[in-house]
Length: 113
Image 1 (tube, rainbow, N blue to C red):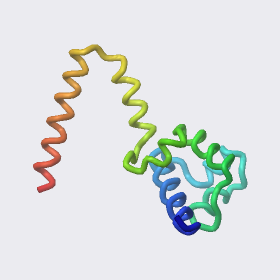
Image 2: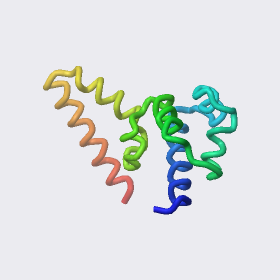
Image 3: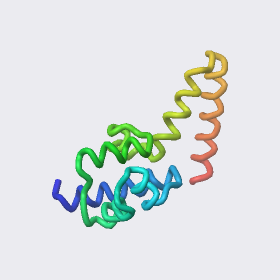
């Protein structure tokens, strides 16, 4: 992968994750203790974060580095929070949630056609 590919990936992924949490680029930069334009420079593909910067981005967005790279998961924080809540349900409650999800997904498929 070329450097420009990494810049594209980081720019898009940080924006996506920031947007999910409703945090501005400036706000994330300041939370990290960086210059107010730090995240903007990454999102504008002018720089890449250092390893420490990357880990700080993950920490501030409350995601793991693994979740950062799992692009098929567009809302990792929401998913993790939901999984924690699901883990507190008993078997019958989980079955009810499972059934509800199946109905929602079936309706989504028929709507998309």
